[in-house]
Each structure stands twice: as C-alpha cells, then as structure tokens.
Image 1: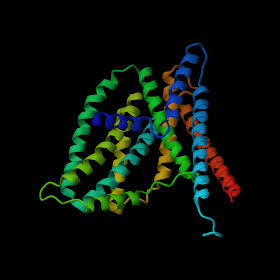
Image 2: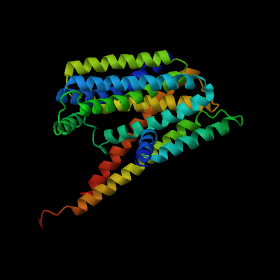
Image 3: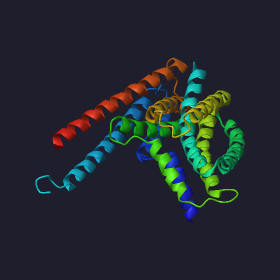
Image 4: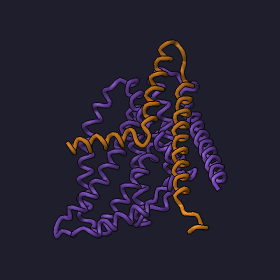
Length: 83
Length: 246
C-alpha cells in the first residue's frame, strides 16, 4: 500500500509538478483548440494565448503566497525598540 | 532548421538531467569509491536500455496526431513547470537551486553510513537511483522529442552530445557543477519545451501553423518575450510591495 502511494506520488510529481492548475489548463486548452479546429477554424492563436494566461495566473498566485509569507515573517519579527 | 531545433532542444533538456545525475554520482564516488558507484551506474543503464527497448516500438505504432497531442501536452506541462520555477528564481521570489549545497548534503549524508567490505550497497543504490531517475527523464525526452518528429536519431544525437559535454565538464571540474549556470539552462529548457509543446499539441489538435515549421521560431521568440515580461512584472510588483512594507 505504501509502495503504491509512493509510486503514485512519484508520477504525480513527475508529470504534474508544483502547480496542478497548469496541467489542468493545458489539457482544457488543447481540448478547446481541437474543438475549434474541428469546427472549421484555424485555431493557432488559441494555445499560445491560453499558455500565457495559465502561466500568468500561476505566477500571480505564487507572488501572492510570497507576499503573504513575507508579511507573516515581518509581523513575527520583534521590533528593534522593544528587543 | 527543424532538425537543428530538435537537436538543440534534446541537447539542452538532456544536459540539465545529466548535470543532476553527475552531481550525485560524483558525490557518491568521491566519498565511497568508484567501484560500487560504477556498478550502480551500469545497473541503471541496463534497466534504462530495457525500458527504452520496450517503449520505443509501442510509441512508433501510435498515430502521429494522437502522439503529437499527448506528447505536446506533456511537454507543455513540463515546460511550463520549468519555466515557472525559472521565472520565480529570476525575479527573486524563489531561491536559486544550489548544486554545491546538494553536493555537500550528499557528502554529509554519505559520510554517516557504514562502508561495506565488498560491494558498497549504499553507494550502489545512490548511484543507481540518481542515474536511473535522471536517465528515465533523458529517455523520455529522446523518445518523445524524436518520436513525435519521426527522428529519434537526431534527438539521440543531441542527448549523446550533451552526455559528452557534461562528462568533459565533470572531468574538468571534478566536483560540483556550480559553474554551469543552472537557472539559465533551465530557463532555456523551459522555453524550448513550452514552444515545442505548443507547436506539437496544437498541430495534433488540427491546427495549421502559418509558415509551417518556421512557426516554431516565432513560438520560441513569443515564449522568451513572455517570460522576460513576467520576470519584469514580478520584480516590479515585489519591489513595490517591499517598499510599501517598510
């Protein structure tokens, strides 16, 4: 059971990585591109646009987490006057 | 041109994996001896050969468009994850990956274990693990890059060239490969994987790229420009937040 868990975790980390929303966004974007293409449109701008949006959103979330952590760290530090 | 880009992408992507494997192998071989580490490397290479032999023909029988969609989407996910980390590092939001620290940590860890009289299983296992896992990624890159373009030979050639380069670098420095700017390498790999991923998955999904293969160059330029723009925006946003906090 533990082996299966580790095996699953290895493949999850290997394929999906740090941010699962990127993997989901890629799958949805490719499916959407296929849908648009098979309806007679040349959908070449769709995927680059979706990639820029997904990466931008992921980086924005990372920035917000970074800010939250920095704010938490600075609030936990004792001030110089009282230390 | 397309062959050159395929070669470059395989070369860069494999070089990153090989640098990581070489760091682990050097750490284990220097502290525990080359003999057991060499057995670990040989066993890992044997296992990899068996896996590539089993997967290669199965991949070649898949229809090209389905293969392009699957491989392209996977590469795109890998590429975006690499690019995300590289952008976060370049903008100062994430610590730079320190190969020297990993090397020292491996040495410290290895120094605490008992040394065996004959085959050192610890050195064997660590070398095996490092080479097998990184080698699996190299095999994946060769089979996917080459398989999607029906040109496994060029992808394998790129991997072979990167192996020669990393081995020479390893012999010359004989220590942690901190002189290879890892984040720059990862940035480049992330760009290549993302551009190839967009190109192949869209093509497999039924897209006709304007300019055909030349669209790859435009895609690489697009991904580079997008990445630099994200780095600039993140740096500015982080600096303004730091100023507001003080």
